[in-house]
Length: 126
Image (cartoon, rainbow, N blue to C red; front, top):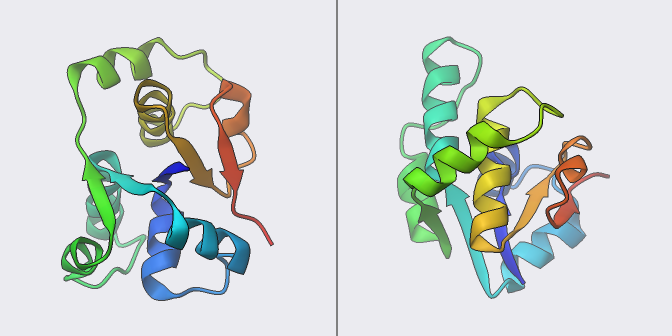
């Protein structure tokens, strides 16, 4: 399975947070491919600057040291994200949906609204 980690799942993975179910952690560990989006990096930077999120300064180095690979945002991703139906207004989540669809990835998320977009989703819920 090829996976795309939602921002919160990426952070839970890095922090070994109990909110990430063991089954989901195992799925990420054995995935043929695990990716995180440049949109997640952008979202983390914004929330950190606003004081809404505390993340270690070296989190990108920690991700790079793992087997989770960065997925860049392309023009095709941006066009697809902008054209999605309005099930969800979070621009970062909409980008992840577009990337999952175009790159044929299963989105790993705890957000129960994202399956409404018809992309494969692995719900990371206890």
